[in-house]
Image (cartoon, rainbow, N blue to C red; front, side):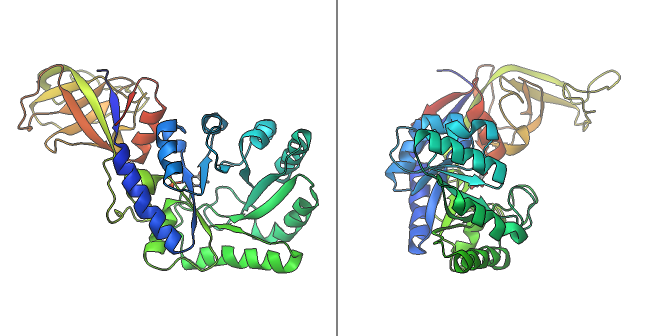
Length: 353
Ligand SMILES: *Cc1c(COP(=O)(O)O)cnc(C)c1O
């Protein structure tokens, strides 16, 4: 068996999906299952598809390529690069967009291969990541309607990711109203009103999601059983479908404070230390190249994470009831940022079971 290793319990993810999909279906919300945090790997995408998810969404063309075999509409959820337009129209049925120059490029690329590419126009509603300003909406929509190989199916918003703005009935209500306004003014039919990511899920649970939202794009809530506006657990879901195992390569009693003048660490930061006297320190063979050490928690609650460099993770195991040895495995629960890096790292073995 090879380490470090991330253990992925498929049954738990399946369970989470069923709970979330049921709740969405009950409220007439279609779900775009977001696969980016597991790099679009087939094992999990397969579970998404067989559970009856409506769309698969990913931010990277490389991942959409892996998802090619699944017979379900695929969505590129990062604003496309102009330079990748040809790939986009080939591998994605739908893309989220906010730049006319890119949309024109998609139109050209779609014409070349004889397809109509669908787009969701993203609106800027306060979080200051992607989106056109609502004041420019009519002008943009009119031009898009004139493009023969582009079909606008809806509007979307992304909140919380950059500015931390929480979705609420007010900002999502605005999205719904803009969609209605455009329908009225242009006569086109807007099917998709995509009200955000896992941070919008709490509104659904509290019956506060504005009527007229028809779609959510959900990744983290499915994988980690948590809504992301307030970080609350979602009832009847698992938050431990992913467990990281890493191996102890050194175990020694050493002081808790380094000796000598303290300069910068491997990442250019000046470290500081708490003096706990001599402690039992374990070094694990995993590091910042593979994970985010601020986003993982040892299952042995008596262990604390002291720090890490590129490929060494240093733990204080002094207070643990277990008598660890070199070669033992320490396990961690992971949150989003660690999950993202662990799944992306080529050095971390993926164990689906
Ligand atoms: C990452 C992403 C999502 C999914 O976010 P989660 O918090 O994992 O649900 C949805 N939409 C866009 C545009 C994204 O980039």
